[in-house]
Length: 54
Image (cartoon, rainbow, N blue to C red; front, side):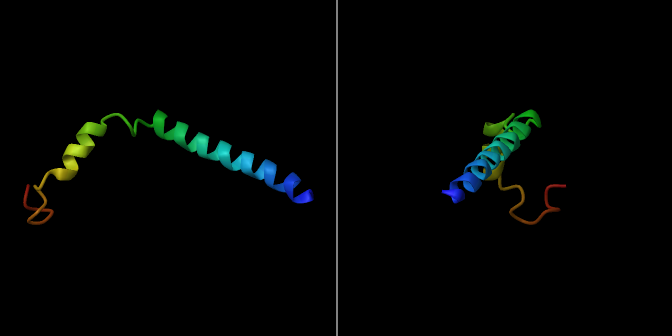
């Protein structure tokens, strides 16, 4: 029974930390342009090397 007294607050703290990290990514604008990110990964302008497009 004492293990539950230790694990319950720990799991709550872990869940709140994950929620805070998710909220931080939303506020930082990391989900602003998901369609643009999906299209950029398919772009092959870097196929010949990193300096080929410059």
